[in-house]
Length: 213
Image (tube, rainbow, N blue to C red; front, side):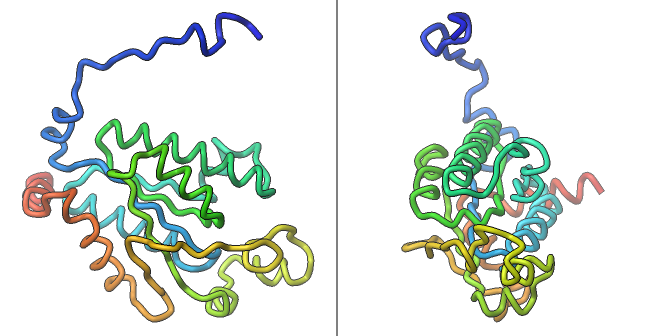
């Protein structure tokens, strides 16, 4: 290994901008909402709807979506248990950096293993991590099958597909559980904003949004 790139020669560079300064600038505290659930459960729909609502309220946020990330940052990863773990590790590191910038991060990943989600929580920080279980049942997800993936998995065309040929470990104690087969998007947003309420000032955000109109 080149000594110039070895960990022993790396030194963490301290920033002159404090987290408190970013809180004052953005009028919010950083947090990561980690949405987990089966394919087709409604994670991406809710993540992008929440992002839109937060932007309308004047809050700086960003969605890290499973499919989108695999087009670039994680394009080299497959779907073996080891690759899934590395997928989650990289996303957690990105979310941590975005939180350090003061942003609200919304992730949308199946993230099927409890151990991997625990790793993400530890990397991001317990105080900034909120696990949201999109608890839509396998039956409902298969009936929707918006991408036709369950049909392909049942036909043996997709290996290691969560819920069919690979396991999904249900969160033991999520911050919030939402079943999109029973709740409409607006209802889900109400509950999600409730989770975020300690981190945002909605009144200030509304004023900011109006001021930019």
